[in-house]
Length: 339
Image (cartoon, rainbow, N blue to C red; front, top):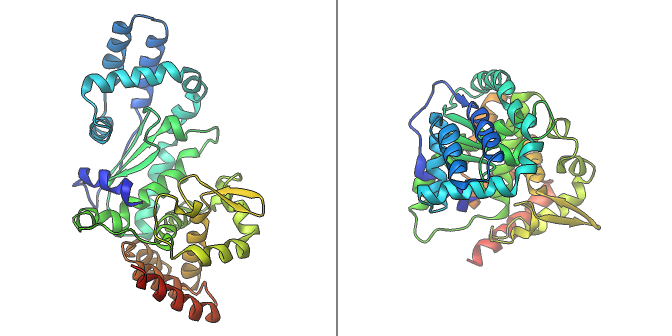
């Protein structure tokens, strides 16, 4: 979680409590450049087409995306252009296949606009930013950038007519969460500390839960092939494993709970099942709350840079049984002594 946020915190936006701007026009610009590039073998002409039709026509959102990528991947303008051409050359079949799906993001703008109005109504503290749909180089999927959100459409577009809606709501929630709003403070701490798996599960699970509340669809209804389908029918088994590993520091291996890694359950391998576990804890807290609006705000504003805060939320959620709480309190205390 933190290794991604560090880069994004460099680009904090000043737009707040206003209109969410959705930029999708760059998608058409990309495919105009793409069509011209494909009919020429002259690399100078290909560079010209990419510059003229895509880069020079860049929306304000696309300009932010370009600035971010150059900085994040340490590329000069010339290197950036050449790496784009290389990506297009190597992935032309994929980019052709996803073309109608990617361009459908333009048609989804009215739905997303409506969802942001609903978001604001159930979470009045919502801060606004830009949502930027682009065709990138296969390096950025859905990523918060300060208060803004970058959508690498080449990685995320699919055949579903509303593929962008819940994904945007999930990633946009990350821009609202406490840890993103306080990224500069977090990364000024020396030495920087890693939180435990529990905190990251709540970070991701909360984003999925908020997306569900806003859109009015469950994750599995929106995506029948998601890990949530497996999760709902194997929740007890997943919880038993999660209890054993949730106090582990969030290191590079992450015990296969996140980062598209496969977690094994009796021979069945499931990716990103940590999202599901965090979601179920958040859902329990939300369902138990009398004031749903207050509960939603409490979860979004939860300090997930603190293991103590994450653990207290788990206990308050009502998800563990009374017997489990006693055992978990002992194990959490032991995990902190190891530091």
